[in-house]
Length: 424
Ligand code: GDP
Ligand code: IMO
Ligand code: MG
Image (tube, rainbow, N blue to C red; front, side, top):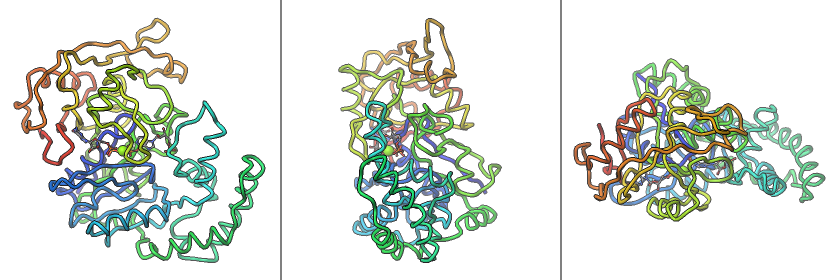
């Protein structure tokens, strides 16, 4: 049976946690395939309790689902233990959570370098989450990373940490004027954490392939979003992994032909956290309204999210680079009560109309949205459960977006709750 990929179509925070939870009852496995604890995925259970998941797949809240942190994820062992403890304290069964032996570890020096590196960039900073994500992926690509399986071999772990610190301490002390990290201290903290998670380390690639062979369904839960992808996003203002659909096969260790459905999660407007271009960003009272009504504050870092209108150029782009089969359109309820709802249908770049994502970073920075206005609706739609329950103008808005982004909207979010969803 199939693998289903679920990915953010914009700059993250589209509602992937809710969407994963919604599908939880239909799948046997949920796998995170990239990113790390830079993510913050919110799930609101039917009893009203809400959870903010960072590193652990959102399927953990569905009893019976098996959850995997895949090889493509970077894992801060201490953060994983804290997150597990938080869930355990709330009575969530986390005993089955597995961690790929090949997942790279975020080490204390990665976090130190992420934070100080951003400070040195000054105005050019990326606005990272400061969780050590970028430096950990740098080491993975440079082939000097530490992997989960290394926690099982103290000798190898020490060799790797010593070799890494030889170099990292030069960077921290000589380049950034910071204190050197002590090998023994780093070893102690990583091993202490390792002892608490080593029983979870597994050959998850083999397990997932066997599950697929046995007809089980695997949901691949992306974090971040298409425009934060290191290849396809608004580089360099991106994260250091591939959230796009192609990354799912790599980050879980399954063949791409296993994937039969690619669901894009798309907010009915646009948000972004951190630096970088954002053509439809609103710097006025309307931006403030979206932030307030939409509750647009980062789950993870508590930073206010930048807000703006829906951007169909981005939607089209996401459909294309991910091969989206259908979309979940979230937060349509947030747009209730507006006289008109503008949608960016194209950009104007240096006086020229541009229907697709501009090729160069400079042109993305200079892109001015070309808006088309759609009539709004006044009704509270949070109780709508069928497409026909929606006001005619809300229906027309959804249908117009489908036309512009070139894919069907198969579900619509009208509130944070699991049941506040219209399935079409
Ligand atoms: P993720 O990172 O993609 O999982 O998204 P976040 O959890 O960071 O942010 C999405 C926020 O929107 C969360 O607070 C969700 O509870 C909330 N949310 C999700 N879908 C809807 C929806 O359809 N309507 C409303 N009003 N809130 C939603
Ligand atoms: P979820 O999964 C929104 C952003 C950061 C920064 C950039 C790089 O909840 O959608 P990093 O720490 O990854 O090196 O930061 O990426 N970013 C996110 N923005 N949602 C996320 O995750 C994000 N994860 C990282 O704000 O701009
Ligand atoms: Mg989030």
